[in-house]
Amino acid sequence: MKTIILCITGIFTMTVSQAAGTKTADHTAFRSGGGFVMSVSLANFKGVITNNLQADLSWTTMMESGVAYFEIQRSGDGMNFQDIDSVKSKMTISTNVYQLQYSYTDAHPLAGTSFYRIKVIGKNGYTNQSPVVQISNNADEGIRIYPTLIQNNMVFVETNKNLRTVSLEFFDLSGKKI
Image 1 (cartoon, helix red, strand yellow):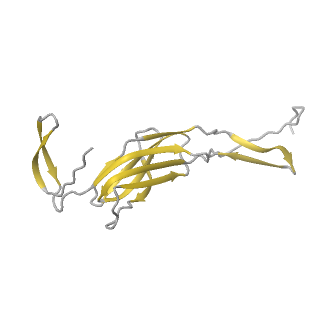
Image 2 (cartoon, one colour):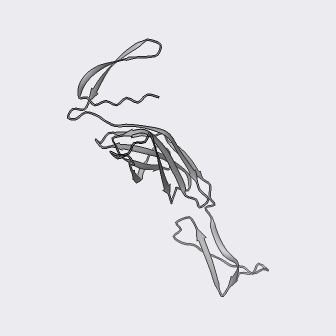
């Protein structure tokens, strides 16, 4: 993989020579007024569901330059993404490392399958997007009631769904409604 950093303005014709010796020409326009400077290669972007049902995302950048921050985006269908948070770039003037590690935890991933991507935002406003990572959250979406024996007329109901109304009926060991 090659990263090319350009700091030029105007309209130019670029000639690119490939390893086989063939040449291609492409008419390319660059922004005026300061040029374009942003370089970042995402070495990897991974996501997993943890035991406590959170989505842990991690990525590594290589040769990061001119990046302001990363927008974390999530989707339920893999096409319509929403920004859920952002992570500032760790690169500073005094940072002198080839790779930088980043992570983000989505404490409330969508039930079922969540799709994530990272939108890289440059200091000059230029953007780039990562490939999409798909994470399946196969957590039980039902209701949990405990303790199994009612004590002091108290029962606890726990669910990971947003329920507006819940009706509970209790029966004794003979099947008679209490």
